[in-house]
Image 1 (cartoon, rainbow, N blue to C red):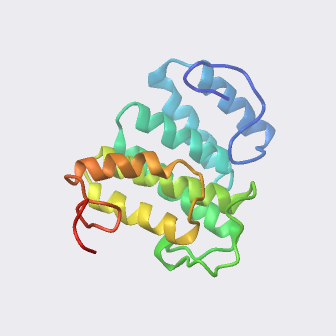
Image 2: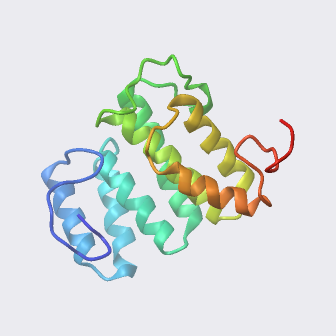
Length: 174
């Protein structure tokens, strides 16, 4: 469901949803922007394990520059995905040897994608260092994971005055 265009689809990023949640997501897609948030948070309350709802929530709030709400949704989505993927609840405790397949569709991939979304949200809310920590963690977990974190990394680098993801300015000795 594309909440920006209202394009109808029954394919949701994050997996399947119940019929009640599906109805709410479709209603949110067709609703006025000021009504969407309430519909999406209602869907989250009904189905706190539905990862697709968190994706819709953090995309919606980030698009409206409501970064506190977007971060709240992303953190809740991260927790729900961690539980489903059997990952530690603290994202910093997830290590390369955790046994999760971040390449296959499923909760682990959603978790990694949501970690990237959280990096974007933190960057946009004026926290480039916090964003860089998240991006560094993604790279440690899955080098070349292709979740789109490279673009955010370039934005973080620019925000930090050209520092590379490891914090070293370009051209400086590491």
